Image (cartoon, helix red, strand yellow):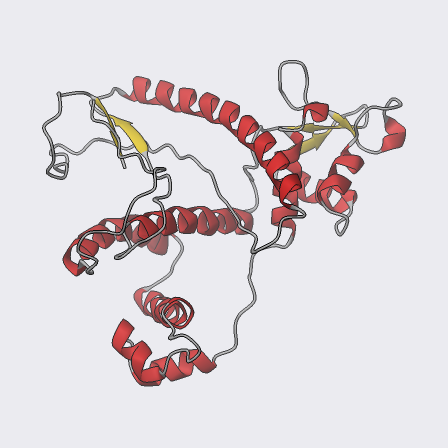
Length: 310
């Protein structure tokens, strides 16, 4: 078993501090494979992606690579990105489009997160309690769904949140008037728009972490980005590992959300800019290629079926 690089330890800037276009191109080629499948599955063709890429390059050059107190000229952005100056000017002048994601998604997700992490809303076995739809339907002092929503947001009504969660197949209203959570995580079954919202948010954050860790002349510490893999598995054993991964994530998720709730409360009066964090997990199962990709050159390690990588 190889030892993973301690991604959470402070680290100095990369030695060379120079871009590595060839290595970046190899990595991007692999990243583009599932992206190509997403495009084909949902009818998105090359011209649309080229336009999206141009917009992303121009926006990133403007926001992350602008000169202090000067910003960036069209010529400088064109030199940084390879986007023609006419396109740069057109894209800079284009109105910013609104986020197409449903505004209910963040609130609904936060309600579920609090439901599965706050001790008042949990049974003795740490599963989510069924909650009375309104305070009047439950016993005195018993937590209810309306109170849960109010603790998360005062701007959205409990009825609207319930309707959205029910539409997505996350909750159900029982005959006794109690609301039951059908899943221990916010996983919409019906909302395609919401699923795309989480795809964009989760993959974007994960990729941004990897990009941060590989940035030339990086001065800040590495962010956590590690995974473990096992190979030469039967389909049955792969399925069992997926079930185990789900059980482990459910336990870790509860613990993290409790800690995050305390952190948010302690941060309310803190001065300075506020930060947004994301902590996630994924499990991927695919038929193994006959000739697996060679691992990067490094110290020899004892042969093992399970390896951890950065």
